[in-house]
Image (tube, rainbow, N blue to C red; front, side, top):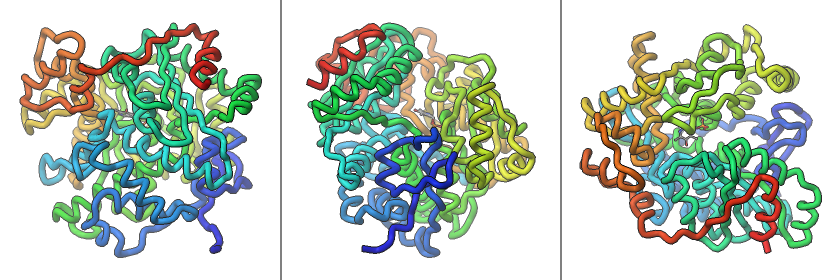
Length: 499
Ligand SMILES: *Cc1c(COP(=O)(O)O)cnc(C)c1O
């Protein structure tokens, strides 16, 4: 047996040392920090050239293997085939790059089963997690608990559906998801899935799930029945890792199609919420992908724009419900991992996080701010501008984007206007426009928006584009889950679903 060199440590305690499988099983460090690779491995000099002629699945195996020494190539190959195969993704490219012009390319991350970029990680995570459980000799059935305001719940349900050794239970707020999102969840197929709505808003569902995690009596009862709880939260390393792959893959596509020369720098522009997606781009850069600048795009919840510009992170501000709801976030948890890289000092990170907890605010040192601003640029736009951008890109390029992606295009426009930097840029597209038909139709000038699923046809007729099969297929689907619980009775729902 060779020595295992790739180790994981906590952003708040450098004495923590885990293997990959321990990090993925555990999710979060006991000190509240995030489990993070001790160092970022470098790709060998010829790697991009070799990978450029490989399919997405093989690129995924190659990149992930660098971080997962205890996993065999055979294991990872099986995982990638299951996660990114033709039953799951509607294009063999998996994450295709759509070129708008010489210097603007759009990386489409929504060709999976739920039509949003969460699929890129949540299709892979169940395989990484179940294998990690075996490697760490955990033989009980893992029960994934999720509180969701939309995309994550459906993504996790599709990822864990019928995966051996797992159960998944999703709680969504009765009054907090769109009709299409609710339909996506209550029609979920699979023998190991459960879905219930909670009376109240997202906070109620989230608080309820947190309480389940810390309910000692429930934990004992589940143990008796052979179950234990885990989470599919975006801070799990098993969710960040699969996201590094598509940045490597996008660069390989550009190389293969001779849209960039070997070694030529690109920028990336990422619509950002919890900071997981753009952090993966940063790690791809550390691995050796020639990424120069990272442009962080936010909606009116622009806490990150301000942070990048001033070095002050301040969540004490008005919260906006926007047309790009998956970015309606004021605490970007994955930022903590970037802070560790920039400071190389767990005590400094811990200090910032303590301040954030206590006051909702922290200010990084000048040294950290300088490092941050060398690499990151932040821009934001409101709903009005988001719709204008959707209309502009459609009129100019006949290319249809969803509101999250539009926020990124706005950020790129602002970046180029401010800096004059015309480096080729990969704009990350995180959702199918058909997931947000109402906003998109209105951006295209439609005044009367159809109701329910009829909006899919309306957008199809308007643009000549077919609705993605997973959304169009919702129509004929049987409703399987109708349970609504009060926050106080979520325990009973869990127990009855785990009989
Ligand atoms: C989750 C999500 C985002 C934000 O990604 P983070 O990794 O949280 O920064 C952006 N767009 C869509 C459509 C999403 O579902």
